[in-house]
Structures are given as C-alpha cells and as structure tokens.
Length: 389
Image (cartoon, rainbow, N blue to C red; front, side, top):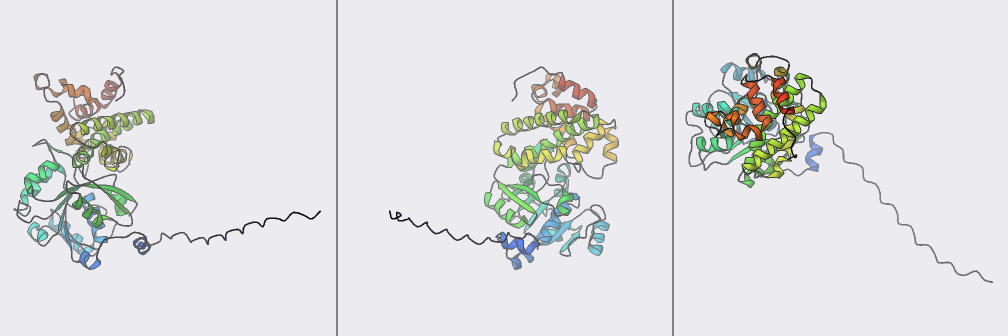
C-alpha cells in the first residue's frame, strides 16, 4: 500500500528579537523614559522662595534647584545666609552636602518675594503665624497673590486650627494653597534616594502643576483634592510616632510596637473620617505611608522623643537638646483640648474623647507629666476587650 499523504506542519513563527532592557544610569536616560512637561528656559527663569532653612526646607530648596529653578531660601539669621552664599553649604543642617549654585539665601522677605512665582512654606506650625506677620505684609492678601506650597502639618495651639484654615486666614482666600505630605525624610531626599509624596489642593489643576515642578528622577509626586485627610493624618501620625518611640524606649518588643501603631492608625482614621476625609487618603502615602515612616524610621524626630521618654528622660531635657522641632509634642496637647471638649469640670481626660482615642490622650498625658510612659502602656493593656474597629 502507498503511504497516506502527510499534512505538512505549519512553519514555526520566527522568534521576535529581544529588546535590550532600558538602562537606568543617569538623569538623561530618566528624562528619555518619562515625559516631563517642563521647558528648560522657562524653568531657569522661574523664581521660587523656600521659607525656612531647617532640614526639610533645605531638602525642598535643593530638590527645586536641581530641577533647574532659581531658588531663594529665606532664613532668619544673616550669618546663615552669608555662609550658604559664600560656601554653598548650610552651616546648620546637612553640612556635608554641597548646595546647588542656583540656590541663594537671604534674610530680606520683601526682596525674596519680589518676582517669585511660588512660595514653599517649611516653617514649624506654631511659628507660622508669627513668621507671616513678620514679613511686613509681603504675604498679606492681595489681588494677584503668589501660590503657596505648605510642608508643615499640625494644629496651631493658639487658634486650634489646621494649616489649611490658618493660611487662607492670614494670606487671603483667593490664593492657591497646596499641602505636601508623605514618607519623606529630608536626609534621604538630600541623598537622592527614591521618595514618594502627595500634593493636595482644592484646585486639582494647581496640584498637578506643582507635581510637574517637583517630580525628578528620585522624587515621585501624586496628587489629591483631599486637603483635610492629608492635613489631619499628617498631624496626628506625629503623636502616634511618639507612642511608638515610648514602646521602643520601654523595651516592649516588636509585638507591642506593631499592635500600638496599628491601633494608632485606627484612631487617625476615625478622627480623619469624622472631619470629612476620604478613606483612600488614609491608606495612601500621606496616611499609613507617612505613619509607618515616622513610627519606625530611625531619623524620625517624634519617634526619638518617644524613645527618650521611654528611657526615663524628661520632656524638658529632650526639647532643650533637640535642634529640630518635633511637631507631635504641641499637636498632642492641642488634640486633647480639641477632642476633650465637654469633659466633666472642663477636664478633657474625663471626656468621651479619652475613651475613643486612648493612644492620643495617653501620649498627651505623658507629655504633660500626668503619668509615666510605663503607666500609659499599662492603661492601654488594662482596657476591657471590645470589637475591633
């Protein structure tokens, strides 16, 4: 018999040539991979003022200067400005880093704000009002105000207001104001390590414009309209970080630390949602992201205050020896007044808020000298069982 005809096999498709993986060396390759809506000529002609020569103010000034902008850093002391301009190094913070040549320092607010297209406020919350009033009207309400990006988060004790309420009151309600938050240690920004943050503003187009200005090969920026969520989470997480530090200082172990921070996040979420925040914000970079960094990061000022308290140091000793402001200390005291309204005999610790927010109130009680860190932890452990919320 003749063999049956065989059906020819289909030709194998020729393999596609493999593309070489993209290289990640150098800023030039990054700009080729990511479309940046920045005109180099326009950037070089844009003046930005950074108010504050502390750690984060310096990091923000360097970031913007490296992006090509003409940066003016407004500082308080003349000798600091002279040192920065003559040596291109800050004499107070990050002395090991050389500052960009397009970064200039001054103590004159009128000259600094003249021609500026953006003002970055990196002033501690409790000093912001006095700083703005000391500028001699340069930041007063006007017809064509310069936009502001605020990096400070907390509650002003004198007015019991958040910065999103304080700044429009002082600088005008017709001014575009945005707020930056997220897990961003200033030293790691100076080292150009990858960092992700959120910029929130009621005007989303303004937030997107700022994101285009800030983004860099190591600095990722997301945007949001939830100013309340970003502000409340950014302020209250500093108090939770003090609690986490006390747990570390007392040597309570990793189990206790994880439980404490998790329950602290629950209190932050509960308070933020009550004030109208978006739950998405609280699970994002400006919520749990910033909380984790501040609670667990070794560079956290608030965590360091808690660690030293847990080891037996007094708050006065800690504050006197600290060069940077730990915003969680005044924020904790302000939160007690804010949440403790209606307490018996005007005692906030006899209010329902003390039961609803035991960690926040416990930290404030330690800071006020009412209890010791050990007693505060024992009080939390002695609370009756309840359904997790």
